[in-house]
Amino acid sequence: MTLRLAGVSIRLGARNVLSGVDLDLAAGTFVAIVGPNGAGKTSALRAMVGELPFRGTISLDGAPLSGLTRAERARRIAYLPQGHVAHWPLPARDIVALGRMPHGAADPARLRPADAEAVDEAMRVTETETLAGRPVTELSGGERARVALARVFAVRAPVILADEPTAALDPRHQLDVSRALRSAADAGALVVAVTHDLGLAARFADLVAVLAEGRLAAIGSPEDALAPGILSRVFGIEAFRAENEGRPVLVPWS
Amino acid sequence: MTARTSGTGTIALLATGAALLFLVSLGIGPVRLPPWEVVRALGGGGSETDRIIVQSIRLPRAILGVSIGGMLGLGGAAMQGLLRNPLAAPSLFGAPQAAAFGAVATLSLGIADALSLALPFAAVAGAFLSIFALVAVAGRNAGLLLLILSGLAISSLAGAATALAMNLAPNPFAALEIAFWLLGSLEDRSMRHVAMALPFMAAGAALLLARRSAFRALTLGEEAAGSLGVNVGRLRLLVITGVALGIGGAVAVAGTIGFIGLISPHLVRPFVGYDPARALVPSALAGACLLTSADIAVRLIPSSSDIKVGVLTALIGVPFFLYLIVRERSRLQAGLIA
Image 1: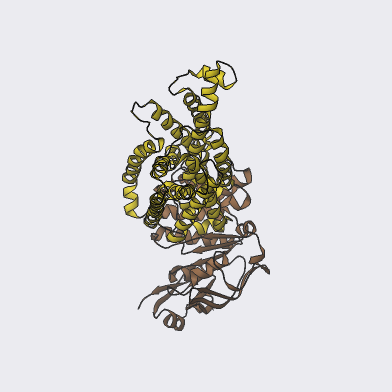
Image 2: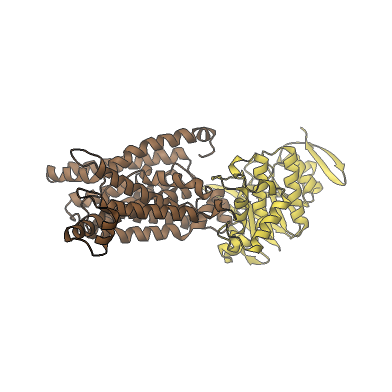
């Protein structure tokens, strides 16, 4: 599945948060969108999931998103918003089962075998099986992030959009969540993650898109898109660089 | 899955309770009748006096008790589900007060008498406007503080407007009548009242139950629910319309009866695994039980003049609300609910 943005612009009030962005993203890739605060990263993601009006076209395999019904879009694009919100103390498994709603599973207590299988598989991959019966509001931040990720995986959508999936997590959970998203991409999904963690982006992403002031400042492999000139121009920083296990290591330094 | 999630046991238990209370309600009054005589009089047997007492005097009151209580319980659960907030209820946000203003305005302006269909329509319009204003003023992702403040403002405005209508009432007796009617009561209601309110409440309940699973998805917040295919904007309109129809219909015949909608969802939530979708029907049944019990209680409490049921529900409901605040306090301060 290919996700294509052509001349996408977003206005929020009087401000242009995104101006004429073109992106061409293919299945089986892990794409990291980075950029300073206010660069339009989250808005771009919200437009892709249909939660924000935009100008231009966003299409899936050549078909514009606007032509899909809500349910059709929900089955194709799974979305993990910031913060992993849960307002009621539902058991974790019921939260994960919400991922089957686009497939018509309205009641987590009466899942069809195929839906139950997708839920179990998603909980296995995220190692959340042991949390199944625990109220989600009583989980730690890291556990809640994994449950939220399981809910997204349970949709079994070909496109996964994640907004700062590793924010506020300890290093162990940052790696676990990144690795789980990496595996989803390896299994054939298109994974697009907005992140502030340049180190994780460099290590895990196939493709890095750098947004600055609503425009695409650079796109390419981590080495190219996070090159010294771009980092100093976009973020005003310099980074320590190395290589480990064949992957670039990048630590913002000064 | 386990019994925790099904909720059918809870529904059966509450439905039985509501049915029993309904029968007791038909037997309580100046003439006390045991349940079997009530059933016989309902079926057309027994003495003529018994039949008149049960069928003409007490049946409308009992029907209104169960249906209005059920509507208030359902409305409370739906509002709490929509706003993802355990302290939300139509009565806290001024919906019944605004509905009462709609009704009072038509009464005191002489547009309609107390049995006209204009009354529920005016009440529904008042309730709709107030909830619409609440959501518009407080915003889509409003925290508790904004909701409570906006609700307070709206309910004060409705109260002031009602006071103005009474102020301008043509004679003091009309004002007194309105004041008593505002207290909320099910006394001396006829089948005409039932016929007037029931269609509105049935339509409201149907709307609120139409998209049940959407409330569950809203647990994840509006954006995630939207990404799962829920049309959040339409759900919001559905709940506003449903609550307005139900509350408007109820207020038009019974005045303002508060706090049933706030309490009922809390009583049932632990038994349905805190699932906002599965709490709807049990909460309606719990509301039916609560209001019918309260209406039985006002007939049993000895007093020189009759106590209005709306006064009793407020006397019990406000301390319960305070208890809820204390219980949620730590979470409120941590900002988890807001």
